[in-house]
Image 1 (cartoon, rainbow, N blue to C red):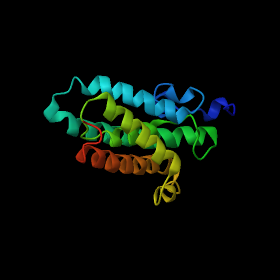
Image 2 (cartoon, rainbow, N blue to C red):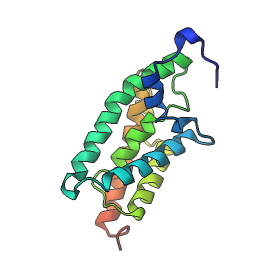
Image 3 (cartoon, rainbow, N blue to C red):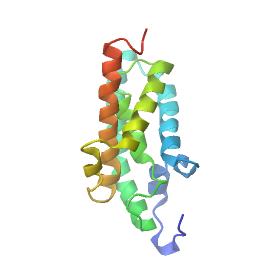
Length: 166
């Protein structure tokens, strides 16, 4: 990690959001830690949300993280002079939440969502890699939303065919 001159530091709110309160500083694989932290936090939070509201709550959470994450990722990337710093994991948080939209609360679905999202985030099938070309925080976050959508689609196919909830 490059040292940051004091005059170019990102604001604290941006650093906390972009690193998901420090999860992005964990090694190895900060993106995996960010995804895991998201699954744990969402598993705990969503269990307290009435079942009829969970789908919308997940969508609202993913949208809120995206709306906060894009400017936070932009500010931190600029401060560190990097297009996509590894420790910025707010994009994993947003994408991981997308993968968990409308899934039953069960360890199997949380594990499947985690694995599916990480696979698509690392693999970056078409057109996800192109989304990285978007400017600054938009490119950082939107490609992970794409990975989350792929994971969401596969998750719901697995649920539809009863693979996960037997």
